[in-house]
Length: 121
Image (cartoon, rainbow, N blue to C red; front, side):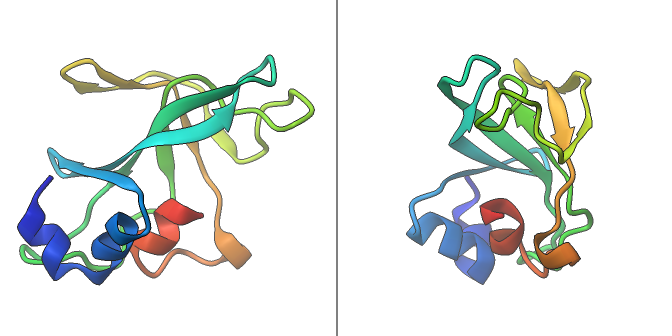
């Protein structure tokens, strides 16, 4: 993780201080150990991947509200795929990091103002 970027970015610092397992890699923000339900209703853990927009020193407003999931396809408590599932396709980030789907959800139907809002949603 880029400790300087996290230290200079209140949204990333807040993610870390609230216990999120954050990594900055190749221009992306990764949040590890995110629980979700698989098709069988079992709890699994995945990684959320987001683009990471900065001004070179700290984060700025996210360029997109969408995130990708490394792991399986998330389901709801009734075993149905999440309604915010946008795309079920492989997205290869290299070094063994391959997302299985893309999610598109906005809190209160608004684009996130920062990465804490985006990733905690």
